[in-house]
Image 1 (cartoon, rainbow, N blue to C red):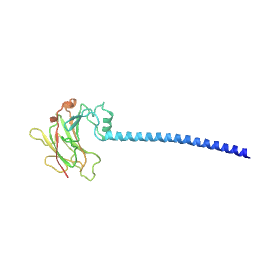
Image 2 (cartoon, rainbow, N blue to C red):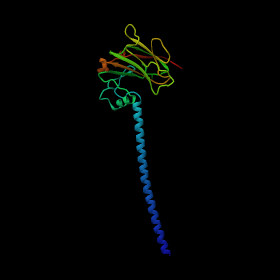
Image 3 (spheres, rainbow, N blue to C red):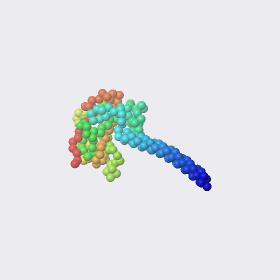
Image 4 (tube, rainbow, N blue to C red):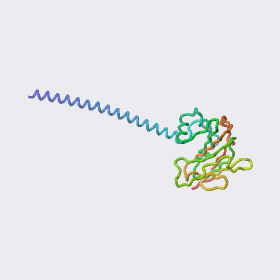
Length: 223
């Protein structure tokens, strides 16, 4: 009886060892599979987050700084980089082609401070030569549904000018005499866009100097 019991115990021990070995191998495989799935999820999350960050604001590449403004001569070119095309697609905009015009944007004043909807700014001077131009303001994020529709910009044909052809636009939350451009929201960052149509400077944007673009000066801010 004893030899038989010993053989049975040995067989049971071997079977238990095989079961443990199989369990360990399965655990290792599942651990590797879990690690691979985690790496894929982490990579996808980081990729989506970086793509969202890169296309949330303005164009990331190809700008030419002139004063507070940044000129985007290649925003509508067929050879535009993928990030520029992604920004256009996210905004739902059709950018100006190279032969159609030029886009200029500003998110700061001449002192380098970010444009804030709670502040009042003076936009003065003249634009580079163009047949027609538009000046618009926008805020980041969804508009306030409780805020009534208001003017979002001016065109070259409707703006009031000085005798020398220069103009002065006041951007701010409170009504101002003359060319008043209301802030699109109560607080938060703002972005100005100046679009020049049929302009000869489209092919030589880098040659513009600071006096050729409107100056942006902060006047006051609400406390």
